[in-house]
Image (tube, rainbow, N blue to C red; front, side, top):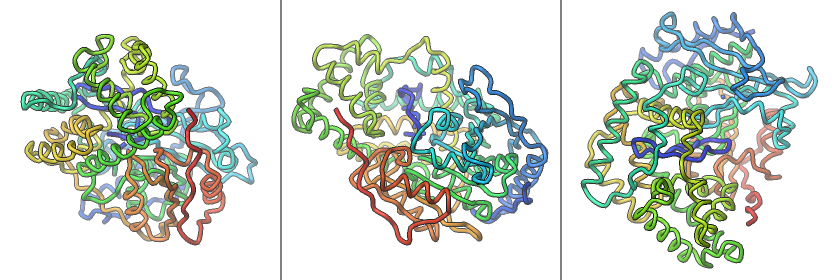
Length: 533
């Protein structure tokens, strides 16, 4: 499962039975010095030196800013360009790849400008190129920060316009219906295992040369080269969802290069959690947030007519699922496609009403609304390519970042046990990640995220009932980063908090970005407004 902001693409199911939502789990230069021993070893030293060489080169070259290509759909005055980075930081003079970046200048005066604010929306596999559009779209939440900062987005390595990778033909990837993720038999499990193995083989076949280098530490090194190319001595960074892990790894490798860092909806950075356990933890949190949504639907029964208790709404869901399993709606929407569509509600409060509305129409006899919402659009080749690419990067990064269990018995035992009480997401998530069990490229040991010399106070923002990145992740990062502050949005569970309107949170984010000041102690905020039916 992946996590990211902004709005998800409608999730599609991959050939590995893989769930894609554009969100997980899905941002004049001193010569950089990296904290070489962040996760120990001489490899790190070589990569630290390689990053310093690449950053110095990028600082000299700068970025050749131009109007963005028409098909990027980024209107003037947003400008686009490329930054060149080594494929392998241990070999800084070896093969190079290009990363797409974009920017919009600060809206305030020259005197108000505080440099560039670089953004990553999550994934792994999310594109950050829409970030400057927060200025052109006059997003009120970000208006104060935009006065002081150039808003800079980028596509991480392997994503979108940055040397994209692929694992399967995109039209094949979105074809529906997929197998029901919940297995009825050992034969079903065997079929899903075969799909996962074939998916991993497809990644090797289509993108094998990139796979060993598709890691979070390498993306963090890329971030440092982008910082240098922008002419920034230090990094200002906003990371959401997986972007928080990217930020945490960057801050560990380059603590002295951080100026301001906001992390929102936090991936648990513990080595024990990256990434197998993190995904199991997600399944539990998703079940909790799914119930929150059902409670809200039941409370608004006058609007949706899906039942006035959670149990009744769940019954309607199980009935829908059983119907679609027996005979896919419109020939294309089975249980897998339903989970893909409905999971946006546990992700984002903004999806509560639209999801309930489509469900309500279905129960009232309008099947087409649900088919339109949940079925893939085979004519949207660009969207399908983006979905396939996002899933490929998600898989490549999570599989390469850490060593995954290779024993099917362990996967089977853990997911069977978890499914009993957390059936909404468990098996769908398992199949999405199973390619990592037979991953063809080298798997690393995760960076030991910790405070290094020169790291300033980091601002951590988290909702209490987040499904994609459970609350414990924010607590864990807070413990590891000395001097950090945690803002908790109580009784809330939307993924990606900083873009929501909350008068307790927005001014604190502004204040930190504009002055560097943090509250004297951690803060608990009331929730943002509950969605209206």
